[in-house]
Image (tube, rainbow, N blue to C red; front, side):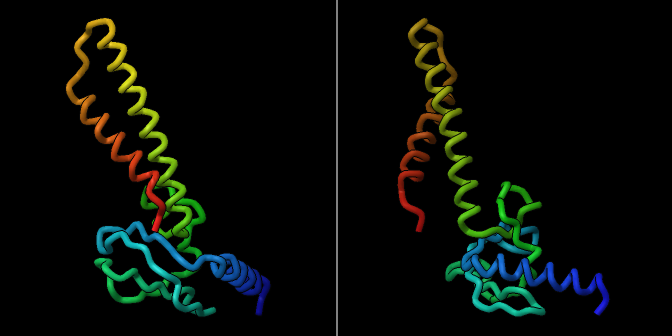
Length: 143
């Protein structure tokens, strides 16, 4: 085994050990695959990880991924397609918090506009309803 092969094997084994700490993933999907959550059901030194999609997912058959395909942080775009489930929920909660803040600002601007007798845009009511729904969703525990 040459130096390069040894490095590649060591790197692969390191990624395998890191990913063994993960038991659930979120796959954002792509043009050919639906987004879904899944469980790592097998580990192979040559193949990587077998992912079994959750029951009720559009994708029903288990599939294999390499450890290098798992990103540690989800950023909401195709560059971070497969992530640990916890990383997806962290991104989701952060995104909801940002939207909640923005909607709160819009609601405050509507209140201010009402106090000084300026007609606020009608769509602010839609934002207000969306904010209420997000608050309810965020307070519900993740399953």
